[in-house]
Length: 296
Image 1 (spheres, rainbow, N blue to C red):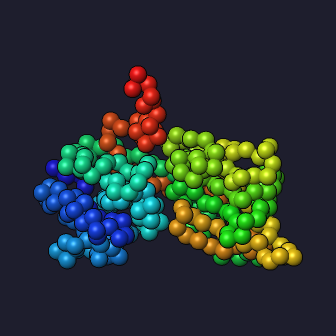
Image 2 (image 1 turned 180 degrees about the horizontal axis):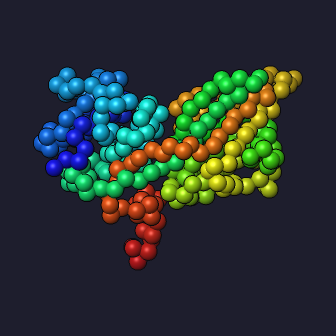
Image 3 (image 1 turned 135 degrees about the horizontal axis):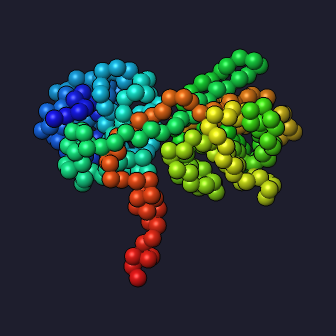
C-alpha cells in the first residue's frame, strides 16, 4: 500500500533528450497505482505529460519526485511553497549529493520508499534578506548557500561581517559563502570549507580566496544572525560589481552599503531517504573515500 499516493514529478529542464529516464520512472509509478501529477512548467520535458494532471506546489501532492541532479533539486526547493511536502530524488545529473537513488535502482527503491520503507530527513535552510537604505529589497531561501561575491570584475571586495550584532571581521576576498550543513559539500567545500553533518543546526562562513591567511572558515549556530555589509564604493576604474546568489540560481546585483542578513529558518526541507543509507555512505560513494584501501 502506498503511503504517498499523490506524487508530483518534476524533471531537469532540457532532459527531453533523455526521455527514457522519465518514461522509466513514470512506468514504475503507474504500475504502483500512484496518482501522478506533472510540473506544469516542465511539461515540454515530459513526452507523456498530456496523459497526466498538473500539480500546484502549494498543496495538492503528498510527495515531490525529482528526476535530475542537485541543481534540479535546488530549483524545486526554491519553487516549493509548502515545505511540508517531502522530496524524493532520482539522480540524472552529475555528482548528485542530494539525490537518493540512481536511475538503475529506481525499480527496486521507488516501490520500497513509497510504501513506507523510507525515513524522513530534515535539512535546514537559510533565510536570506537584503536591506537597502532601511528597506528590504530581496528575500528568499537557500538550501545550500548564499554567496556574496565579485561579479565580472577580478577585484577583491570588502564584506563587513557581524554575528548577532557583534563585529566578526571584514573579509577582503573574492567573496563570502554562507552555507548550511547541506551546502557544506557544495561550493563551500570547493572553497576550503569543512564538511558538516547535515542534521546539525549550523551555519558555515567560508571566505573565497581571502587576502589574509588569517581569515578562515568558521562554523556558528544556525540561530545566529549573520549580517554582511557590502563595501563597494566608486573607484578610479569603475564601480566594483558585487552580486548575491542563492543556491547558484537567484542572482541579485548589490550596491555599496547593502546589508545581507542570513539566519537559519525554523522550517526545514524534508527528504525521503532509504532507511539503510547514511551521510557517511554518501561521502564514501560520492567522494570515493576509502577506494585505495579497498583496492589493496
